[in-house]
Length: 385
Image (cartoon, rainbow, N blue to C red; front, side, top):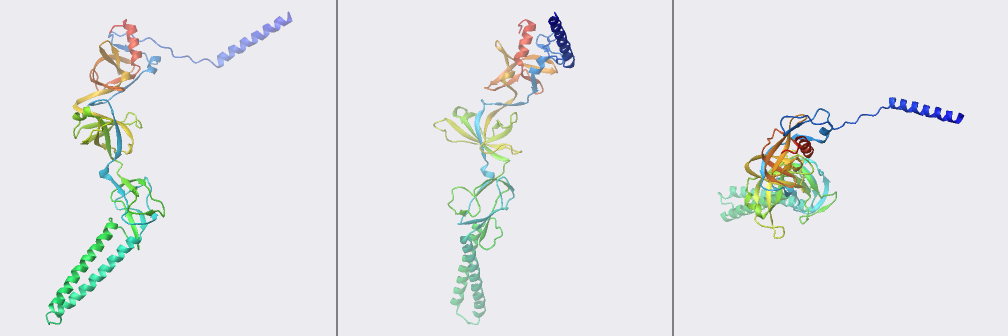
């Protein structure tokens, strides 16, 4: 009997402790789905504020852009060769100083490296010798010019002196031109050190030189590559069946996985003249606008050739709801209220489609949760279209 009383006391204590725990640590209520409000229009549905369904619905205003000729095409970003300089050397020598690193922004004429070259020293010496010889022969001509009137020298000797001066001047010009060719930017020279300077303003994107590297004109790779990162080319692989739709000046919409949701603009400047026999595609070259420098050479991107027949709203295929022969999307005119609209598709791609009628660029279109809204509306309206 005493043992039974002890068990009763233990049970009472446990119940009291459980009650206190419930008071101190109350359970958080879970949001439960709430029924949609009944509206007069069967193509509309509205949820109260805080409804659980709203957590699964996402809407956004999508811009109206030009309609593409086809699905997105593979393309590759490359340097704009009209704004790129690949620098090498025309003489043999050794790198003694490096003045720029990859990623550095440089100005036109800025020194990139210094090269000690015996060939350049020889060219400078030849120029000095040619100048000295020309000056000596000019002095001979000047003296002869004074002596000719008094018959101090024969006329033919004076003519020979003038001919020698012309030859000396030609040799000076040749020697000066060689030095200029070896040092095109005309940078400051110290002894036989040749300065390698950038001919354009831009960014150093490649550098193959190292301290004390032996360089020569026959090197396979350039020592420096300088380019303007805001100017790029886009090489698009276009199926031969679409080549007739591509013209110089055709606009191109470009997307990259590195920058989701961002669009870049390009313009076709050249159409390829050869079809690849294996892929049956033609390479189209376009100038790509890259004002912020986001896209980089050798990136793979998606490109869409745009038509000139106007603009349309581009929506992801997750926003589309098919009911029989018709296609619908849901629009959110105000927070919590959704309206189903019948739309006309201009093109239907693998990931996105272009809508010509039924929506405008200012509408907030449901991109996630369209099927949920359609099920809710069908359940409320008795599966009425």
